[in-house]
Image 1 (cartoon, rainbow, N blue to C red):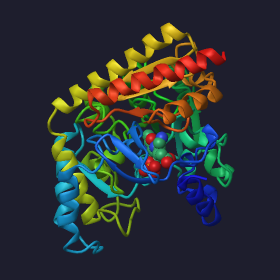
Image 2: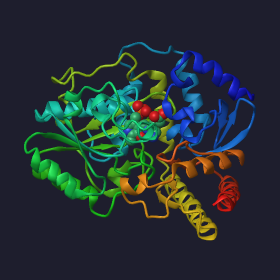
Image 3: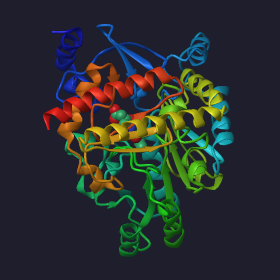
Length: 429
Ligand code: KE4
């Protein structure tokens, strides 16, 4: 047994599945998860000292790479004054002001501790502000694990075969309607059939929890128009796309305005931070200014704020976005060229610094396309890439994240590893 196997056996004794988040358990790739010792830049090192080029990046937060010295210094400096007070601090205001200055179309922000909390709270604001109960989401999109969102969910829920989780009361799930991503007619039908009852449509502006599926031309503007027509709010869940696609996230990248926006991952610089944001008019519905209750002991934690402030200040350098998008596009094209050479039946989607390799020979432009992937072949590809020192998401329905720390050596090594993996898969066909 290697050290990860020994540690996993111990972990499984005391935590469900040995993990604190299901997708980390590597069940979809049928192997023992690597226990991590440390990470620096674009590299992550397991407890046996094995070095990997990391494309998970803690599932998105590490857009500048791991252990960025400026982010670490901000944490070290701040924690000397104490870890948590449960009282207002200047850093919360500073991060809120930073988010408002970087993201279009928002005037107020509430900090929480995760993307789940951000989405759960934004949905409650939408319901409170409109007096309506129903929410439309998209099959295969994942918005965290609050009850209303665990209906036909993506990411780990989809990977684990439970898109509709046990424990969610039918009465709650009944208020969540599901449409098809990139299919405006499916949204219009639900809005018409539930006239006056839909509080909001919530969407990942780029679906990244069914694997990466960009919005079709006109899809996001179409959602905006449908929400305006039917008096529903439009919620952009930017937990992944926020500060990732562009400094201003998907609203900037696509030029479409949402009524409420949720954040996570990058906003915390690797520390537990989520946020929801919108106009003053909408956000003043939130307690204590309004009737929509929302609270959190560690919300706005000063040490977490410091990490987020440091990371977002570094992301003011817009060249970062050009570079990571160019690198992701180059990598995607190299992988497509390998597919053309080895014909193993995979499709590569890429937008911004996000990409996915789907094990299907069809184009993947919607959830049905993503679901047509051969998850066993993805698992075989994952295991080969890991052997070659490339650390990918241990599940087909996730994204690869290219960071500002990925070097051309990292990228060329990744292509070499993919070539070896595809040669092996081709030979086994
Ligand atoms: P968290 O509660 O995990 O911070 O955020 C939930 C969430 C909300 N919205 C979107 C678009 C998300 O992608 C997520 C979480 N993403 C997954 C990865 N696909 C987190 C990884 C995990 O579940 O362990």
